[in-house]
Image (cartoon, rainbow, N blue to C red; front, side, top):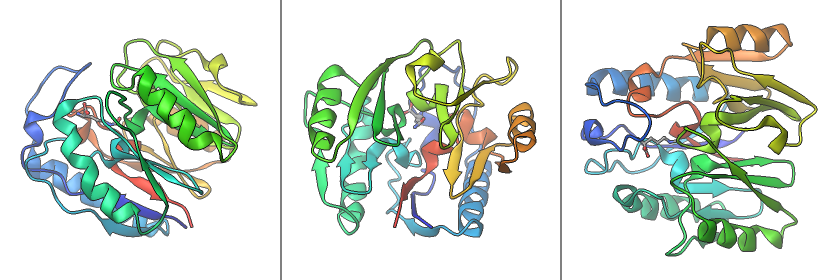
Length: 254
Ligand code: CIR
């Protein structure tokens, strides 16, 4: 089972970046409690938890996914699209260097890890407001040697590619058709989200199980009906900061 890199919620989370959601008050205490429950679930599923150093002055630091992309062969330290988030990457790099050879996206390239979805040997990159063409070009160069093909995916009205689409299992895509064209992905099975749950495609695969937000009951039922093991977790407070289940960890496979 993988190592899960996580980082505590910053007390400054109320000053987080927001792009597609209205700012509403965030309870730091509730956010911390929900985040600890998320970490507890990953541990219960067999992950080894490694905590990155806290960054109290980086409001979005809990969303570690955006700071790195980890492949079996290499890890890519990102250069996040939001300037306020660039201070987050150095400490991720320090820890990741124990697990993988590292490369770093350099200016003027930008990539957020939330825009990068790896499935078999294809690396899908969301053409979001956070990840630019130069970042995608650098990523392509980094991974080509290992046989990965990079494809840029257009997005509408969502923060990151993984807000719009994730694989729940090999060849099984979840997606929101309002935000991304499901045919952009090679998949044997494509399941659109229920219209009442626009963000329900964001799921985290841990081994054979699927972690999803507890508010996505339609999606949980649909996945269970297809025989998948599903673990809901309540991240409603972090959702106010535009975060979701994939954002709060970087999984480093053995
Ligand atoms: C941001 O706008 O950067 C944060 N407030 C939310 C980041 C969520 N990360 C993710 O979806 N990978």
